[in-house]
Length: 91
Image (cartoon, rainbow, N blue to C red; front, side, top):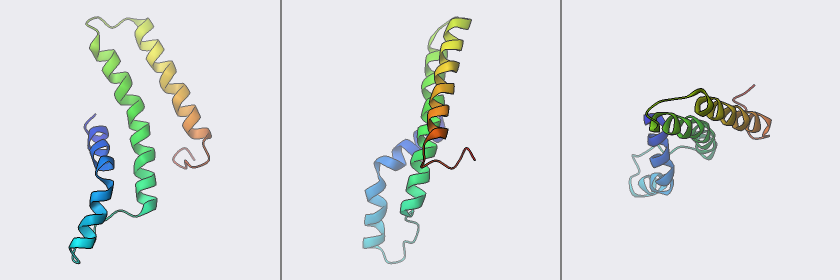
């Protein structure tokens, strides 16, 4: 969950990284557009786990129907992602 939350905040401040480079000529850590794209893909992948984990741990007694529903939703989302033309993490 911490990796998802970290990337979530980083994506919210995406423009700020560009401003750092404009203000400080010694700042060279601004991610490229390709790196931002990869970050977004990883963020979206982790969000599937984040959402499932929050549902599973929200209940006091986990039953198979809750687990199975979340597992199926994760599988469907990952299949959609792998079928997408702009993802190359599944290859």
